Image (cartoon, rainbow, N blue to C red):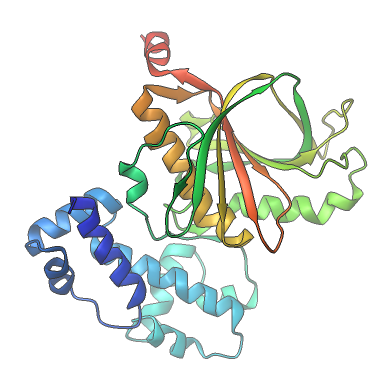
Length: 312
């Protein structure tokens, strides 16, 4: 058994026992490691300490109940997810999300959560046009040539880099709020085409300020331009590497599956081929059906040596 498989066993156990007391000793024994080496390996692979990860996953699950079950008492939710008291739960929730559970329930906003990792994705390489299937995602890497630029119209905002990548940061979901604003105004945007595709674009142009620009919009008519309220953005004609993936439902697709696909594409598939990307990535959203929730990530590949040479 590989080291990552030992840690994945403990991650799966944590997910199934959120309401129980979870001891590091139990997890270490499950992994067949001493407590010292287990905790070191867990942090290396999951990028959080064991206790940090358990707390953040419990908060993520508790927030779902807060949003979906308005009748359940907050103290009962706290106890269900392993918090010893209302006060402990409230303090932890506010530290992570910047608001109390009561405030979130009263005026819910989109939140980013720490997702359960699938460590297999960090250690499995696939060829182009060969699907990779895991417990929660099916993905495939392809190359596509875009001969004609695509025009989009929507909204843009500055987002803290601490909010990226999806699934590895917790807090208020600023891109999600931008999507909500776009969808509220969508019916009034006359320059949108009937094509139906929507895109979310991350442009890493202000990283020195600790932020990046995020654009949320839909397919636009060819003569569309920016104005005081809306931003026009163009996907340039180029050769792209495209990560196609699907999940069980649209909510799963646009949260944890998106984070896993993005990390696999950038951190594993491209990196192990000596490639990086031009400073933007595009999330293409297609209309979900009951049978399929599907989207794509588009990037322009660049050899890492080219980037290194420019920086010298």
